[in-house]
Length: 482
Ligand code: NAD
Image (cartoon, rainbow, N blue to C red):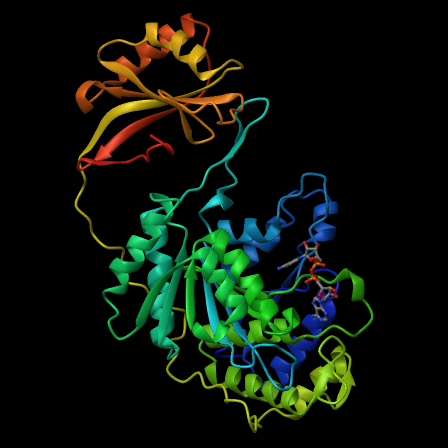
């Protein structure tokens, strides 16, 4: 029983139990040294009254083993159930989602035979904070949060991953031409951290053209590092382009914990029929074995799997008459992989995990940075208003004073006062920007006094955001047209 790695396993919902059984059988036959602790999470647990879908015993097991092999879960529709995946990722601090996207041509049909890229998606920040507000009858707002430490960690993970896995290039994708502060920070940190990795080619693409290129020319890419939402979208595009979502494995990695799974979901449409492809979960388990320092067993399984695919032994969803040789179910596929343990693929490049560090990437501490000088220079107040911008300005101007002047009104991000255009459509939530005189600093008491006067004038606030500069650089963007 020595040297076994304790892991937590959840069989999940839908096809989960079928593909997990097949995966564990292959791991066992390959000689993986694992001490398995099984937990129940997902649909039954939700419906049993645990709103997170994860009971206390499951957390205890995860805290103990720190390694989680998870089959897909069905999130019940409606009823206010929280996504279990998001809960687990956030609770365990799994900041990096790693998805290799590889095509297996000519054995699996794809339009892109030379695709072999890895998506590294930031997993905790961005719009996935789930911080949203209804600001008025007509306007909803979601908060996009990008932090420097969060970005530094994921970007460094991307470069360290590239080095450890013999990858040559890292591409960053953002929309910093529009989101100059949040995406701008991600891009800036990518350039800063990238400078420490001169051995690795690096570039940045705007997300829209980047996503299009992943779909049309995926061979251009090696490692791609992205903020959360773009990473979510691009990783699904990339998985789809490989030719089968059923073949992708993925890891979610943090400083202390790691979770491994298939990219696909619980496929309720084929559950219980014994036809599901266990490959996605199996390749997730291969990533787990590398992570826990059993790289040799990982390579043995990965190569047996590649040989099975090469030999044309395929489950129904990738079976093509002419290319495939034998159609098998979940069990038959697992048996075929087990029979090939010890074999190498004939044509495809064999997997080799020598030199990949166990225990995941050891990241250096975050960069030390000098404290920047922060000065308050104004305030943005949001309020509801059903009239025009001119009427609103007329109502507001008497409430201002010399210390804090109304500099601009915007609606849906576009400046509408002063000198707005009559064509601009306005909704019922407005942003008023007040700035200190001559760009000077502003005291909290001045802001509160202004708000008091506006309140007395029956103004209906929904939000206040202080405006600061940092070492003299504005910590806020200008409105479109300002
Ligand atoms: P899905 O990935 O489960 O299925 C999409 C299609 O792909 C289906 O036609 C399915 O039959 C097929 N498919 C998926 N995996 C396959 C496999 N291994 N072998 C053969 N065919 C396979 O996506 P969905 O239908 O949108 O979602 C179903 C459920 O899964 C939902 O409740 C969703 O919330 C959940 N889900 C869970 C996870 C997870 O736990 N990580 C991820 C995605 C979706």
